[in-house]
Length: 376
Image 1 (cartoon, rainbow, N blue to C red):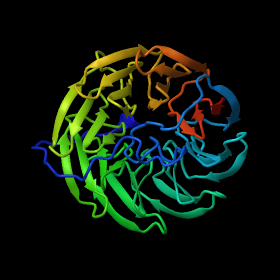
Image 2: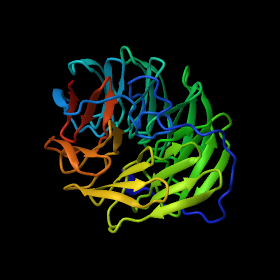
Image 3: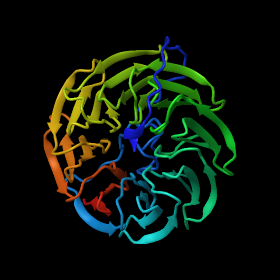
Image 4: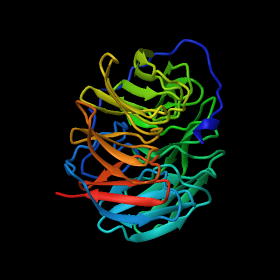
């Protein structure tokens, strides 16, 4: 999927722009739900509610095909896509299927849930708005390329990227196109939304800030490499990772990189999105490593090696970094030391990312199993 990103590198000087006041990490979460790919609109990957110290497997649902889509967890329901081409709604309580909506292509994006609707795209390039109660189609829009980007929200609109090189903004109520912004290459990442700005990094070597009301570009930073991972925003500061593994902190206001760190091995593709909380930035790597970086100066605090690539995006919750690996294990690593505090052997590779809701953890695997963990 992301390995087919076409580079269209640009040159020039990054433009500066003044954005609004900072949005603290986790400020968007008003409940213990997980309504979007990274949990909140700035995409910090931080879960504000407590999770069990020693999670127990509560239920498993066999979806029948690989689950690379990260789940959304809202109220008592789990919403997730499958490679077979479907969106499922399952009970958070016992994993029973509430409804199933067949799509035109595989669904690898994470659903976004807002105001009683589920928004998600597929690899055929169709973006859907489904009724959260019964899965019926409210509206859909055909883009010109596959949609791996997950949905995010701004005001009364929903935003999503496409491999046709556009960032789309639709009115949630009726699917009317509010605007679209054209980049120079596919938009693989999910847009972060902070301070009225949609933040995307694409396959054209730029990190961009787009005004969510007008669709006009208000800032950009040259990052010098393709990017498929989704950015995480803390006010005007953005953390990101490129395909070749460069981990970066960018100042969107000033239009410049604050720091950039490279892994030792750049032979693999890096597509894991960072999690940010209280000075810690946690990255997953194509080299199989999970790294915790100091948000201030970019120095490495610790590194943990798994048995395979880490395409899953970590989540910070209850003092631990939770993340899956291609080695078939789900890990909870102590955020201070990087030591394994808990793990679960799924048996098949995990490329989806953890999703939390109601104190429970939900994640899918490449053999089609969807797992739900909970406990005291």
